[in-house]
Length: 284
Image (cartoon, rainbow, N blue to C red; front, side, top):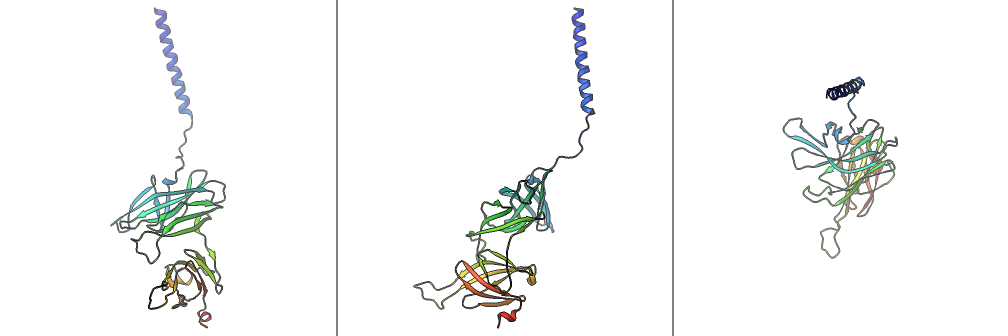
């Protein structure tokens, strides 16, 4: 009996010695003090309207500058993955929404670039208020964003009805919108929502074409016209967008902010205009 007891005591001692040795060896291994990289693009900081917004599980809530309302930013979705900055790694683009206490629901395009240690956010770009998003796509290093918007003349209570496609890419890790290049004194043809950028930084986009022509069989006070509405920003216009309304009958020419605009041709879907900076040229 004493031999069995001695065996049990020795066995327990051997087990305790073994565990102590293992614990010593584990504690001798250097432990990393570097926190793990943030691998989730729903948990990094984006810049929205020049303000940093840090998402936590795709959500941010911060007070406004006055403290009177809360600014709520959320991950919306519409994800697309693909290579955007030439490093051969799959990046991701998606939409964010932002609410500021009113009825507005503002949509932004966001991009997170994949790196060896996680994701790096780019700037965001505003898309619209209370639009209806459609699937986004990444191809050939660019992003196609599709959504349905209202006509500029529509009330915000009107359901979106105009399909919009916009194109973006990443340049030097900055998200930028792609635009066609325009040349002054050469006619430029626009479709709805197309943007053209001129050499001095002027950006012109066609917002809508209003058709007030008298319908067949109707009795009208005048024949009506096709009237394209353009948005202009940049260049000598500055950072606040302005509107230019031309017409196939009443207002074929107009000058604004040192630019002269002349309507050359218009249909229900396209408009061709002639733009110069020297207004004396177009008025001859």
